[in-house]
Length: 157
Ligand code: SME
Image (cartoon, rainbow, N blue to C red):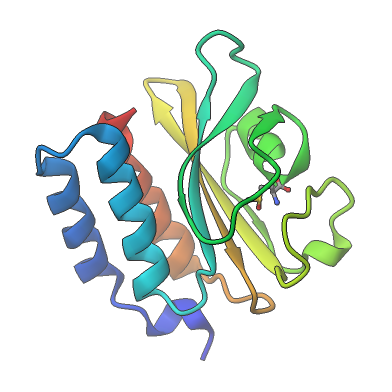
């Protein structure tokens, strides 16, 4: 069974909603959400948020994340999987990163990636980025749950 089908996303989203409602600062709350996802979902090996730069709206800046440090702290729209998702304004799943030519590698262990844009009105304000060390682990359940999660965390941006 693919990873995503084994996860109780409903319970996870309830926990995320509680974090958003808690009166922690936005950065602390996003950090907690990133850690929660990485801890609770075995095929999520790096979880982070990229935020659209207010001064340079065509660039993403690394925000709170859980996992290994990355050199990709600033990514222009259109570049890599993150930049492509921001430019296309839609969720981007890459089952095998070795086959993606427009890809920014952070870590040789990463095999797959999902990026979900976060909207305020019709503007992309941020993204959720998840890397996995498993091949093709993301299912329709992951995609739907993470899109819902991105709606839940929108007030934090
Ligand atoms: N792999 C991403 C870069 C960010 S890291 O995954 C943390 C990309 O291709 O955009």
